[in-house]
Length: 335
Image 1 (tube, rainbow, N blue to C red):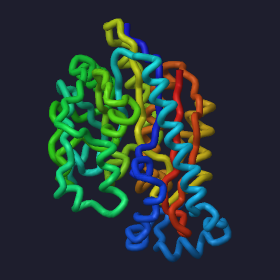
Image 2 (image 1 turned 90 degrees about the vertical axis):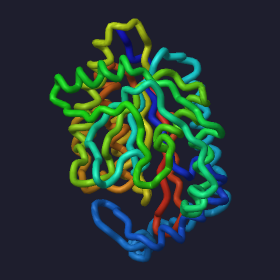
Image 3 (image 1 turned 180 degrees about the vertical axis):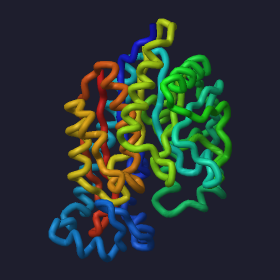
Image 4 (image 1 turned 120 degrees about the vertical axis):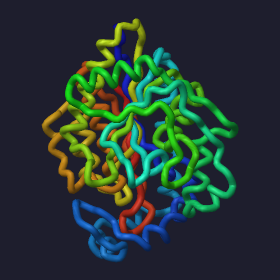
């Protein structure tokens, strides 16, 4: 029987893939849009006023950015080492799509890929030029330099689909990733970051699992994501092949506005395997980028069912403005 032997949780923010001195390049874009924070919508200037007592000016110096960037890179290196040392036979990656595969015409709540491979396409100069500042350079860290076929595991993928369906999770099934609304023609960055930075281009046969964290009205709740994780674990456990399995959750933590209390709530609940606390995180909180915590919550369901305990590698809140915009980074493993 198959056995889950390792779980990994990682952020995949563009801030992890550009020099820290470039973090401020995203601020003009931050200033031009509204932001979700603690379940409410704010303008950038309103957030500056709201958070002025937090002393965020001390968080956005070149020295602090460089120190936190080093912590991020060290944590990614540590997760890559754990992945390599474990040498699991197959994998399952829980992530989300941001219109790289789907479009607003069709977004499944849950989907499982069971094709032979995921295609990796180098970014064209035209596509990179269309991206906002602070993002284009990051894409080079999450896509291959040449066309690549990252191996998947169709047999395990189909087994997972059939088993979670039997537990009343009506998942969409995918055998080939299409080009989504953003026209990226590449694997979603939630997965590309894992392939390149965590697996270091040594991608094991795996099953990509999609959770719709971002797009209403069919976002699964935190509770449903945890239960889905448990069902995924039971599906893996029932697979008759004698294989070891690594499961990776990609995304989060709080962004595009950093919210440290929410991050700590999540991390404490993960560490204590507190299903009630995880399931109780408000849907008002789990919106925008912070919604990617649901990939970690799905991972937590798998880890809970598999009996593996969490080891926090690092938690690094990375602010880039006085409004608190940025990305809180989380890195952890279970074994």
